[in-house]
Amino acid sequence: MKYPPGTVRALLDTPHVSDATRAALQARLDAPAYEPQFFDADSYRLLGAVCARLLPQPERGAEAIDLPAGIDARLLSGLADGWRYDALPPDREAYRLGLGGIQQAAQAQFQQDFLALSAEQQDQVLAAVQAGTAPGDLWLKVEARRFFEELLAEATALYYSHPLAQEEIGYVGMADLPAWTRIGLDEREEREPLEVK
Image 1 (cartoon, rainbow, N blue to C red):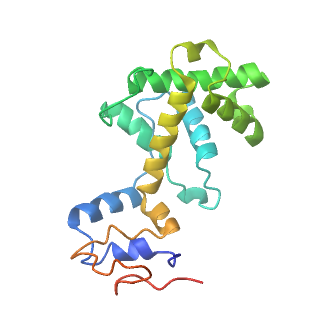
Image 2 (image 1 turned 60 degrees about the vertical axis):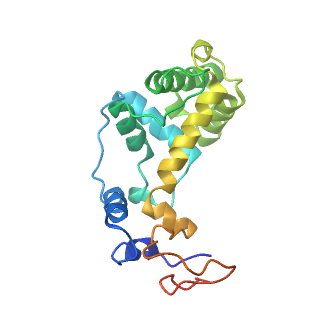
């Protein structure tokens, strides 16, 4: 079902969203411009370019969901999701090595920095990382396939936890107060907007 633009934002102002959920989603909408604190400026730009290839947002322009900011802030805080592959070093080191490996692979494949490559060339580098075939000695310290999987999973989670992405996919599950009672196929709650056709 495709909801009208603004649906999630409109629901935030209703009693169907808990205070804690409203605060979290509103903070994501109102996030100020972010300056990297964990990564140096070059690594942060590289992370941004990689995220832009993994989850492109050309239609958003200046309102693009800032995925690198979420990753940088998490790494700065030292938070983790409570597990990691034994083939990967701790998250901070894995990201530093993995981004360095992407840069090495770009240099080996195209004799240019990743940021200087065309979109198609960037995709080729990332496909090699995903396949575990990317050149570069840093991949001896961090398993390329596992790093790619972790990066993609984190970027995807950050993307779909943002209200703009939730609007994009028609997710209104955060409006769960008092409860969802119409859970059958094609049953619509009164608070759900009508489908856009």
